[in-house]
Structures are given as C-alpha cells and as structure tokens.
Length: 224
Image 1 (cartoon, helix red, strand yellow):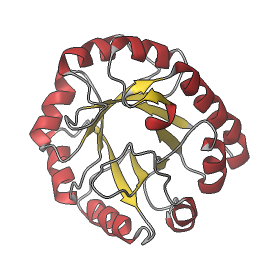
Image 2 (cartoon, rainbow, N blue to C red):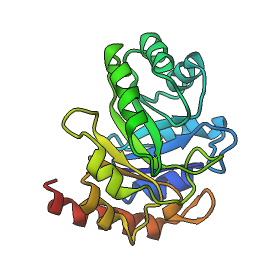
Image 3 (cartoon, helix red, strand yellow):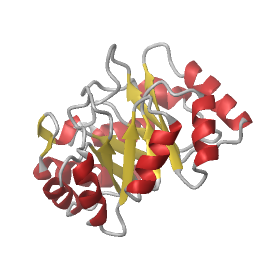
C-alpha cells in the first residue's frame, strides 16, 4: 500500500511525519491552498527526507515550464497535477521533462468516471505514461483537501484497474475510515491531507501514525 501524507509545510512537520514511515509526502505549490509550502522551505524539507520516502510536488493548473523548473530546482521526481489539466497540457510537460513521474488527480461525483475514461484514453493516445490516477471527491470551487469523502462505491465499480494507471484514493480519508475505504475500493494507494490535521494545514503526528497503521492493517485483506 502506497501511503502519501500531503500538505507538508515546514521541516519540523516533515520530520514528524517521516518518523511514521509513509511512502511519500506531498508539497503543495498552489498558492491559494492553506497547505501551500513556502519555496524557501521546500528545499530544506526535500533535503532531509529519508531515501525511502518520496517527495511529490502538487500543482493546480500551473504551466508545464513552471512545474518542470520547480521540480528540477528542488530535486523532486514526481509531480501531482490537481487542477483541470488537459491531456495536451500533460503531454507538453512530459516532453519538456520526460523523467518526471506524473500523477493526475480527478474529482469524481455522482456522475461517475466517464470523464476519467475519456481523459486517460487521450493521454494513452499521446503515449504519456502516468504513475497513478488520484481519485478525489468533487466539491464546487475547491481543488481538494476539503475533507469530503469520494464516492467509494462508484469508484470501486467503475475504475478499470486492469487497464488504467494505479488507483490512488483520496477525499475525506481519516484514521477511522481508511481501512473501510481500502477494503471497499481496493486501491493501489491512499492519500490524506485534512484527515490527519489538528487544524487546516497543521499535521498531527498522532493522527498520521494512526492513519498509516489503519491503512496497513487493511492491506492484507485486499491482497497487498
């Protein structure tokens, strides 16, 4: 189970979260987010990460050259695109920075995954590889981190795990419900931000540890 703790904003929080041993942490470079990381701190966070923990840079509708420059500057090898980026947009980024691993986020509601299917098909036609697809909940006027739960039944029934990139589940996950979510959806990984915070943007190490333990306890029940 690939576990990502998203929205790390300072080195002290990074140290506390890394002690809980997730697979990855997320650094949010979207200025309007309460989890925005100051560029002056991003390098310090990345430089002190253990080798086993991956840094993921999160962007919302940023230009490909901006994403590439940011990831190169801070030595980040994975970018998560959490806005309305088109397949053409992602193709431009891939051509500009082909070694950058890409995660594309989708906000799914009651209408299901048809838009996801169309997007993935076009991306496949362009031969752009994706590290994973993140499925988040849809909330008007927000690009994630709302604490709203994604429609697990819809995702479980409609996500084509054998054909599409690995599924990274997000949206309203907490230490209390992540085990149920994993058993219901059977994702490749889980991503959490607000569900392990004591206040917006402030990570709680106790909640992080509880989340990771709950996710790993549920993993054997879905075949790892």
